[in-house]
Length: 195
Image (cartoon, rainbow, N blue to C red; front, top):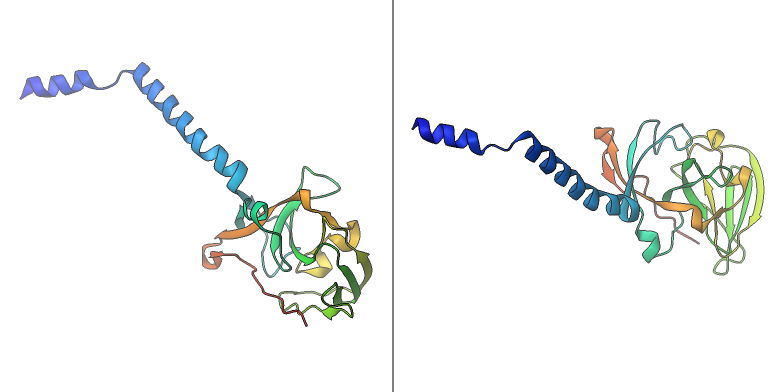
């Protein structure tokens, strides 16, 4: 019995073997994690109040980076993107206007004009917390989106810095992990009905 114990102790890996095992594990983890984070999904923490009540400061999101490679962004999608005036910063906003549409804002009423609705239709926005009295008129090109925060009075968005180019989109808010009591898939999801 003593010989078996001594033998097992002798077969335990040395410090050098442990180091190489740890290095091998780290390498395998990188091979798996980096492509996922680079191509498929990326974590973000909400900073600020521009999306209240949909998202609050400190919410932890997982952003789906692959969907927009397979399909086009839709109205009311909540997206994370590089801020056009400083691409080292990321913003989270809601898509309001789509490519080739005209967005008109009078006070707090948003009207969209497009090929399907040449007379325009007013957006139903139950997610908006605080309205803002802005007048904006913007015609979008075929690679541009109009984005706004749900907390309109506290949001720096397309009303102030213009249209968002598609190439700046990082992805769609796919999961909210924190806070736990608000955890869910496609947080902020809302389907707009066009007249």
